Amino acid sequence: MELDRRDFLKLTGALTYTIAASGCATSAPTAAPAAAKAAGGKVEVHWLGQASTKLTSTTGKVIVIDPFLTNNPKTPQQYKNLDALGKVDMILVTHGHGDHTGDVRMLAERTGATVLGPAGLIATLVDLGWVKPDKAVRFGKGGRVNPAGPEITITQVRAEHSSEVTVTDAATKKSTTYPGGEPCGFIVEFENGFKLYHMGDTGIFGDMRLIGDYYKPDLVMIPIGGHFVMDPRDAAFVTKTMLKPKFAIPFHYGTIPVLKGTPQEYQQHLGQTSTQVFPISPGDKLTF
Ligand SMILES: [Zn+2]
Image 1 (cartoon, protein in one colour):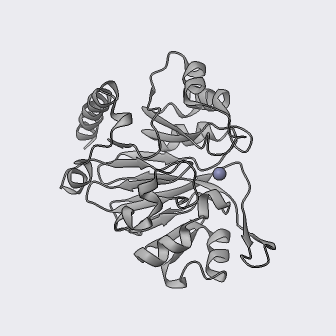
Image 2 (cartoon, helix red, strand yellow):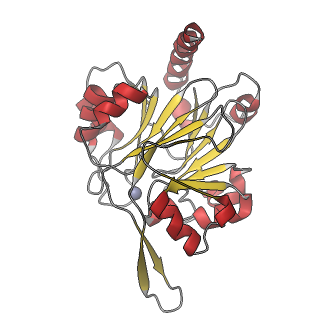
């Protein structure tokens, strides 16, 4: 088993390098979804701007994390129509802010997906009527859940941030803020053992070292914008000295003016490193 896994990683390392070198970041490989559904296929990571990410597992299970598409200035126009996402099995939500929950309600309604997240956040989303109680999975940091069957494990981990759900009445423009539990990140382990760590919104914290040592993520999706989250210097330090993943995708930058960090700055601060960085654009897909 361990041998298979090492071979797999060696293989994907070479493959993704080829993809990056040939400029995959600017062209969305259209054949990828079909390939991902094939038995023994690959994991597809489709970044849609800010923290919004669609994952397709090797057996075709679809997970959307932090859907914020219809009002996301960086989401490509075609994905502002939620039907373009196709079927969705699970929606994971890291915390209650609008740039992570914006389309949870609509996407859950359209797809019938199960919605998972921090217990306190999910309680509020159920109370607000955004998520049906029978489609809601409340769990806590350190918890492992398998809502799509035993082959995909989702672990909730710490994030250093805040979590509130603010709802603005369309008619009166008055806003009301509800408790959103505690913010989190997610580690998704796929059928083939590949582990993706979606960090959510977070500042730097010491237990990132524990997460790196213990969960050993292959790929991290890491916030770099600053102001509400880590900036490129923090993110580079964390990548290099604490998480040490094989691959990194910087995200949560450039969506609003205060999120100033850039992938170029992140790579400059990283310097020489064994982590391969994919400075992709919203709408781009990668397979691993
Ligand atoms: Zn955010």
